[in-house]
Length: 125
Image (cartoon, rainbow, N blue to C red; front, side):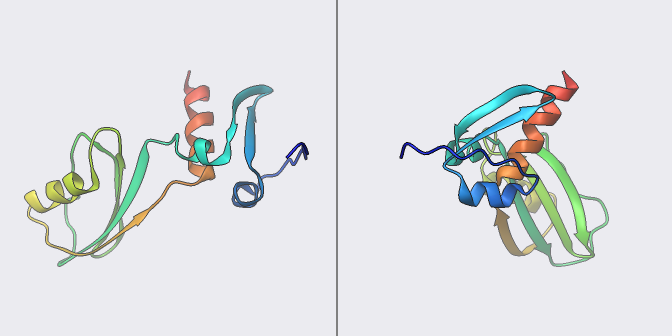
């Protein structure tokens, strides 16, 4: 408590691990200044990695899927908006489209995901 260290870095994973509070500056403007955990929890996107029972032709789709991409012959990665849909609903949508899910894993958002989300939304504006 009571000590401030200013760390500038492009290694966001190190900043996430070392810092209690993080400020993000984009093009000279302060766009975020929050406790690290609170900043990481800001992102709406979560990722499911699925292994399916057969080679994938057409990728599953749904309006709540932010992105769906093929990562292997039988593997896909689906980014979804956690504020609009649950992981169970995403899995249900994939199954409803005729896919059998063999394995599933999740990827939690990290500081880099938040950084990209914050800076890209500002640049698009």
